[in-house]
Image (cartoon, rainbow, N blue to C red; front, side):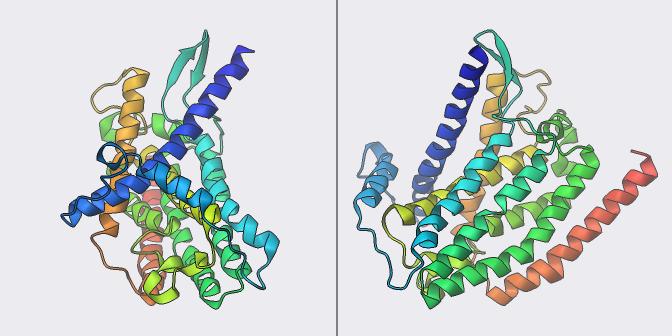
Length: 335
């Protein structure tokens, strides 16, 4: 009974943290952009505008739902959920820390520990793109359909580079288990950002394309596509798309922390308390989340042909070269 209770507590805390962080990211997006542009940002709803995400959620709940004429009713309603669900499913295998004791039971800071956690994330996380494609097609709108098609072409452009960057980390670590990958980086000098700097750079770039974030937000770039794939959506269906986007941002930031920044390891503190390790994990994740916002309000958007050229002519050859060099070094050193 205690085992089930401990598991339920972990589920509630991790999923509550994911949804809460995704909501707060909408506030952070506005606050950081205001700071970059020398504005104040949201400051009316609650102290320093901290209740703005709650106000946005209430507003979306009470907005009118619209079903376009000629739209596929089933897929139009299902597509936003298909975008949000994969991010919520993949967070289940992210290890947030070491072991702790609850109600006399020693447990790990993750919902599930899978031996093939990396494959699970790649397989389930890749389903989110179908929500965008189906949403664009089911809307019976040419603008929405064009946004969905751009998203599918974008996925093909960066997905291979992302997988090859992760394969290089797997080769160095010798495991598909995310917890083992994090534990292999216990020492600061063993972090994969030092051992695989090119793979880390490639992964960070593909993170932006994975989550449809600027400068790779071609699926929804407003000046060209009138809002893109979600043009015809309103109310909470529109909110689910953004919940999926921000949840995916949090999950990808957690994955980058696990793969390249040692997970919950604390630099120069070999046997850190689990609370300190969790705080370190959250701080590293926050750095990647800040990078998402910083890049959006700093770099201009690329053209679509530039993205395709970057994915196929630059990133893919670099990822293959990095994997070849990694394999060669491992063979020569006998690792």
